[in-house]
Length: 153
Image (cartoon, rainbow, N blue to C red; front, side, top):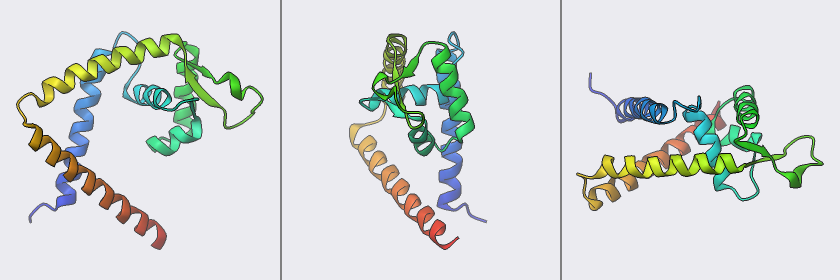
């Protein structure tokens, strides 16, 4: 039996996710944070005005309970806070980075840049560009298929 493209793609995604978690986990082990926390912090950083728990759920596909626990932990440890502009909101308020969160993200960004450089040092720019185009095309097509299946199911 030959492997399908989806089988190979899924295995590679799972393996790469595991390797990223391991490498990143070792780099931030002094903080007690993991890759899911880092993703939350980076999402907050990338969105002016902050991000709500709902947006984090939608973006990461983490369930509400997990996101709530992560945001609570990040808030308790001083990495994030509620956006003061949303003070009057009971729901849907956004989280923004604190100074500590910004410093942490700078540290992670520098680490990711260093790691990225090492990761691709023996791969040509043309090969990387082709890889990104192909990966993006596969991701877009997989999203379309998932949405179609959702409409039928």
